[in-house]
Image (cartoon, rainbow, N blue to C red; front, side):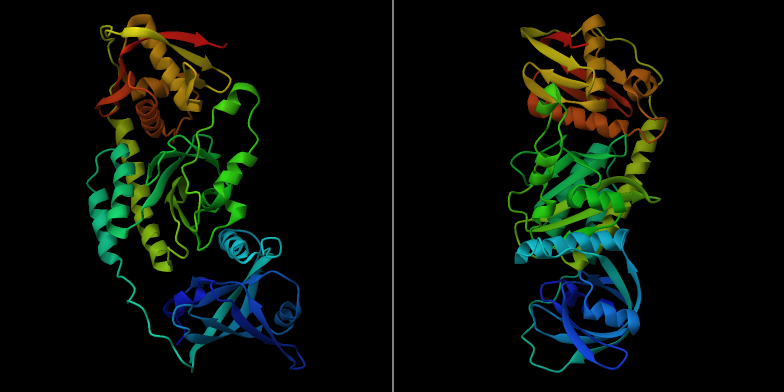
Length: 443
């Protein structure tokens, strides 16, 4: 047997692997490896953490024996492997680095386990080690029907907002993933913002993660799925967000709390790509240890590939079908005490009275809309005019405008009942205003 696919349950890192090497004079050496990572059907990678006797032997004589153990059945397999090379950056290295952080945090070795490299080996042979095996649990679920059900449902959605919500809804229905988020890459390409979530007390819509920060940010930066089985304090979003430097003054108040679980013991972040261009990240987590398997990861990669194509198609359709212009509407009736809308142009931050609403491109869009309403009572708008407005500083391509409008709409729905955005057609929407607005700019 030479197919690593058949023994993937042994590569979860729950039980360390035994690695046997020998020096050029034939002296044997046995040590433990924290991690044996699946690369493909014929290759694995071992964590390189210390320059020890094993490392010395491998560089001198590139053959080793690795014994891996299934943590549920105690079934063991012996792998004959040949060392090929070491990777110190890139997708495989980052994936192993994050997983090792989870293992280290779980075992109290966070200050000891540091990945120096990912040693890639060719698997020459795999043999089962004789010995007592515990009764196997229920056979692993066939996920193809669930993938099919989710794919069929997503294929029928007609707009981006439905795609965000339907994805999370059907992942819970067909896979049982109760806690999930959909994040989209912003115009700068440096941050991701939450556009939809499921399973949390607070939605976290509008919360941001920098590319490269935490499990979500690492998955985005390296365009690779990241899956860990244990809580990793090094990648905790609560710690990450607190550690980020906030801008002085009013910007310190403009942080939307991330909706993550307080005790997140399993995490899976899958980048959403189209033609290797990053669009966003699908993020799942659970309070259970080892909740997500290799099979779950495979299934989510397949689904996110469809999501990436659909996001691209739906955004392109919005651009192609946008109306060229919209006439001004009659002023809407507004009543009640005036609400102060405060705008800070340095960061395009918007407050409704003392309540933070939104910032960035979405904040600039909102300020444009309420100014048009205040000056002439206009409530009907279209995406095309927003794209052509230089004040919004949208890039020429891939501006993600539709996702920003969805974010703004959802923040308004969460924060107030007197303002809203209502879609009136493809590329067209209406501003709903039910209270008198007093606009105040800090400029």
